[in-house]
Length: 544
Ligand code: G16
Image 1 (cartoon, rainbow, N blue to C red):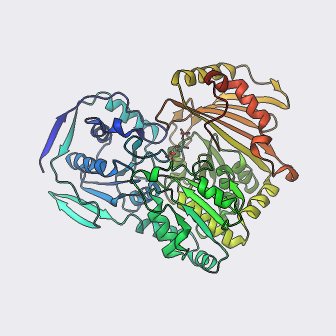
Image 2: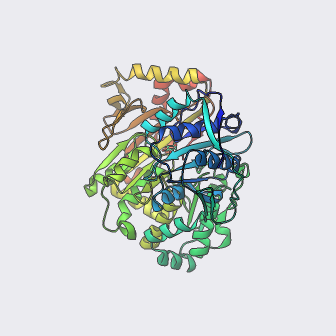
Image 3: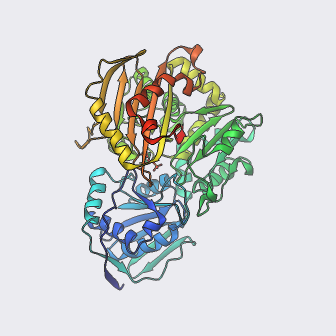
């Protein structure tokens, strides 16, 4: 194999965010940009000579080209085997599973998740370690540091690999295996859930469903699992063909971007169950006829009902949620006397707890839920969990949610996002909040008395690491909270996220519209951060 060393221009902006490096396609297409980042990763990683690397992506524009580049750089750097999803496709949870199942050294996942795709849109890449989970912060920082001084990369002179045909080939001692993207994942799902019961409930019409793959990677997975294996009707998977531009969709499974599904679910013709996933298949949105389940409630409900699922019938070791996720799951953990951990935003922070067997389920307000089965959040897993639950409890989604609220109370919750805010303004807001939190404790704002105000800093009890500056929390005596943080996944300006929650124990008040129920706290949030005043905007870009 002929290996060339190419001198390259150094880039100084390759700092991975919450989940890998995400930039506009045009940025990634700059000469040597992708090559540099991949070489920086390989320069930091120790002892992978002769070992295997998993490669796959969500199929967005530039996916195939990027994979061909990565194959050549991985070959030049000494990997022994490359395991690649057919057509270059692997959902993020499937990639996580494949790394674990085949004992790979790690994997490169090409995705900018829920961000739109196309020539003028976003691309992304992240490295996952051998437990199948996203590289921890110490590694991503090291990749960035290396990229800032990188002057050359190594690349093998190889012909492009045919990504479309399953099978193995040997090129000068390097084994390249193209695998079916869905098989291993579908088998894993069958080992977790009661597929016979699901099949019966779907085929006898007790469950009707609509799953929106948003023209992204889950189309192939949903068709195989929901239609081929469980017998759902052909039309139960919408937008099921993965497209390079996601059909122009913004594959972010929420009520705004999955509005076709949302309209259906609030109509007379709604099926029993509706769900959507994102670009790379790790997020989920759950709906029932006439009801949207917030991700925070979904996590709490899955935790409260986990023993109904074959794989979790022995009970849960513990649960975890990201800091801005509502405290609904905390109440379940307290009731069942299991530990509940609060981690910073970012799936990578759950990895150590999962590896140490401290938790079985975890989730985030950002439409992510998952379990010990992989080290990523998993959209279709959450869908199957809900379907299994509906089939076992023989209740509708609305009945399950309302009974849950009756038993545990409702954590009324909403997130307000202000996207593409000028970075200077956003940084000013954070600086002002940093100052304010020092004086807020004890202050009274209407019905709300500030109990604590801090900047969240996480101490990982497993590896002893500390992650500071993870967002501002303002907690009130009555359990309500306002949280402010800047997103780590945007590619334009800054995104300010404001998370607002209030606990409502009174079942007669559970049906309130969150925007009305939280109105006072929403105003208070503006009083603290002044985002409307500073940007001249009158409403958030997205409310979830
Ligand atoms: C990523 C991370 C999640 C995080 C989400 C939002 O998800 O894996 O852990 O909650 O981003 O992060 P932020 O609030 O910083 O934008 P995904 O689905 O984009 O990979």
